[in-house]
Structure formats: structure tokens, C-alpha cells
Image 1: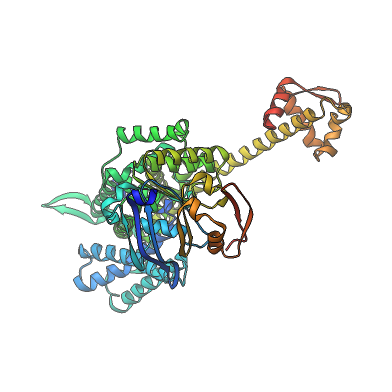
Image 2: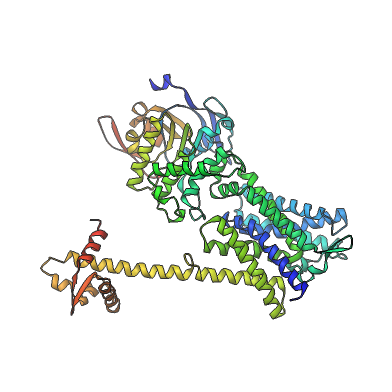
Length: 260
Length: 369
């Protein structure tokens, strides 16, 4: 089996994160094997984004620890790429598409050193990969939502990491962008990368991913989609807020309902 | 123009440039109000440092005031983090308190020295040329010019060196942290620059003008460009224009120099807000109007396209019919028809309209065909 033969990319032990006195993640234990294409699913407020941010050290942790390839994050920072939610930045910021993509190289450059020709070429290549090469000189406020998302993906690609953490890359994108992202995720997996994606659309989980983590403040389950993405476990994840549209040959169609 | 007149303008231009550089990042980080807070709160730092040194010219005053600026920022953050008040309220709570304590301290213990609150708020640029640096009998120039020149050089050097980091932290603090750039360090460095600039400038131009020159010129530049390097450069230029324009306005009106400069800075922003080529209100209104006509013509083309081969084509294609069918007023309908005719989308034969090939093509494209 995949899990037993491959190394662990991310190991999370007893992770608890709280905002003020409310626990957002409660005692999470999770091993993410290297080379999987994994979705994190769960209802709103389940702590999916917080989990990604905790892995990246962006939120203070009450208890527990995260190890990446067996080492603390600070030692392997450059092996991890991050795609934040598209809405987390100001798209009116005065800068160009190429400039935003080059930001992905800043970590490798370190303090003070300026990006040069190599960074520029890497950024242009990444833009080509997401079908945005012609937009390189465009001001970012002129992009559609899907184009913004592809720029963010290109920015993660130039980081040339081993592990990719993406926060809702499919949120509100057009069909072209969705296809581009799915293609890109598969390419990354073929290249042996580990990809972790916060995902909202339950229906596409079996089609897009091979590994899934069900989360609702606590860890519900994690493993291969075939084994974990079951009505029983989904019901436990979403409580009553879920309706199953029916099952057909291994594919499960489920719709999370009612918010909260 | 006399030598003091020239020197006053030169000092003002240097102050404006020094303010615009950190001000650009304040505007982009939506922290404009922080310049207000810092430029007022530093007073307590100056007062406390003065009590220790008992010398108004001591460089310790600048150190004390800069520290107070940074302390103000952390107090605001501390208050905000309690989760009891929002950030804007936290700013509004912290700096008036620090400022008022400073005002009381001055009134109570330092009344007999030159540290009055009028000078703090408005400064006295007109007197700046009289306070000179004299070294071994040589008159090197006004002291304010040296202080502000040094601060301008510091700001330019720090922003030049850490341009990439400032840009990243401002645009996407999450990614900056994930890449290992500590956003908090960059943030406090910027706040230290704002503080030191405010301290240096307030003696010459007062805290009101510090706020005006930190915010208005970068905000104006933001309307004129969508490139960050250009925004920094334009911010400096607009600030310089406000400084020189304000000086002559004050000269002409025989009014406060600082007040006039702040007024010109506001007027320049107002002009850009109206007239900026892309983001100005007039450009936006014209673009909307153009879109409205464009949309109406497309609607007309689609309407004619749908009824092209139908038996009721003749009836549907009458100008008068558009009023009921598309709910257009007569005058509007006439105008749309005239514009569409001019663009070669339709042909008009008395009251009957026919779609040209170009019009049919437009309709098909609009329908996604």
C-alpha cells in the first residue's frame, strides 16, 4: 500500500490551535505520506485553513508539533510552497502579474538580494504552465477571479518546492481555470510532489484526489479516498448537514448543506 | 526670491520627499491613520527625553520620540488584540491619551521653555532658516535642512534596500511569513521610519503637515499609476509640488505656510480624484457611459437578429416598437439606432430597421455563438 511504502511528508502530533478561548483545531494527529494528492474537507469552521496555516507556522499553536520530512519547518521552509486564499490579498495593489509570480522566488533569494533575470525567466515559464504567459505585463487589478488564481498557482510553481499547500484554489473559478488547476495538480503528483488542497466541493473529491482528510475541529479520518470517503465518515464529519445524492460504482456524490 | 525664501522651500521639498516614501507603504497597508497617531504621540517622547536631558537640542529627543512612535504602534496592537476594540478605535484611543498627557506635562512642568503646543501642531517653517549649523565660523545652512536631509537619505536607503521585502509583506503577509520573512520585523521597521520622519519633520512643519505630506501625495500617486516604483516617485513629486505651491499660496494669502501646504496637498488629491486618466471619477463615468451605449447597441442587434426571419419581422423591427419591446424611452431608442447605424450594425429604411452582416456577427458573438 502507498502509505506503508512511502515516507511521511508532513507529520502532525497532538496539534491544538485556539483563537482566544475557542479551539479551532483540537488534538489533531495526521500523517501525510509523500507523493499524495490530498484534499482536506470539512464543514465551514472546521479549521481547514487553520490546519494549513499551522503547518506553515502562520498561527500560534497551543500544543503539539508539526514536522516536515522529519524536521522542524524552519529548517525546510524552502521545500514548502503556499497558495493562500485568493481573497486574502488586495488585488488593487500597484504591481504586475510577472512581479507577483516572481515573489515566489523571494524565499530562495533571502533578504535584500533583488530578483534578476533567472527569477524573471522562472516566472515566465510558470506563467506559461498555467496559460497566463500573455498576461505577464498586465496590472493585477485587471484579472478575473480565475486568472488571479492561476497567477497564485504560478507563484507557487516558481518556489519549486516538494510540498504544496493550497487554500481553496477552486473557490469561485471558471471552468478553464478549474481544468488548468486539475491538470497542474496531476502534473505535480507525477513529479513526485506532495500536494495538500483545502477543498469545498465534495462531488469532485474522488475524481481529483487520491487521498483525503476529513476534518471537523477534530480529525475524523485520513487515508486513501476509496477507504475514507464513505457516507458513514462524511456523516460524522458534517453532522446532519449533508445529503447524499446517490452512489454509483465507487463514486460518491454528496452535497454538504446548510452552512455552519 | 531671497535666500531664506529659497531655503524654506528647499526644506519643505525635502520634508515632503522624506514623508512620501514611508507614506506610500502606509497608504498601501491601509494604515494611513497610523501617521496621525505617531506624529502626535511622539510629543510625549520628546517631553520625557527633555526632562532627562534638559536640553531641547539634544539628539536624545529624537531617540526618545522615535521610541514612543514604536511604543504607540505596539500599544495599538496590544489593545486591538484583546478583541474588545477594532483597530481604528484602538488608534483613536491610544494617541490622544499619550498626546494629552504630554500637553499636561508641558503645561505643568515645562511652561517656561520653548515647547509650546502650537509649534507642535503647526511648526514654524518661516523661522527654520534662522536656526543654522555653523562649523568653525562657516555657515553650512539651516539645521532643519540637515536633519531632514539625513532622514530623507535614511528613508531612501532603507526602502531601497528592503524594497522587495516591503512589497511582499504589504501585498501578502501570509506568503511573506511562509517564505521566512518576518512580517512583524518589516512592519516595525516601517513604523520606526514613520516615527523618525515625524520627529524630524514636526519641528519644522508641525504634526498636521506631517500627516498631510505622508498620506495625500502617495494617495494622489496611487490614482495616477499602477506601478509601485512609479507610485513612490510620483508621491515624492506631488509632495514637492504641494510644498512649493503651498509656500507661494501662503505668501500670496499671508497665511500659515504649513496650513497652505496641507491645503495644496489636499487640492492636488482632489484634482487627481476627478481627472486621473484611468481611476479618476470623470474617466470612470465616461467609461460607464460608453459601456451603456455599447450594451444597448448589442441588445438592439440581438433583438433584430432574433426576429430576422420571423413573420413578424417587419413589426418587430420598427423603431417605435423598441419602446415597448426593450422598454427604451423614445429619445434613447433614437440615439441607440443612430449610433448603431453609424457603426454599420444596422440599416434604416424609414421606420424599419434591418441588421447588416456586421450587426448579425455582433449579435452572434454576444450570444456566445
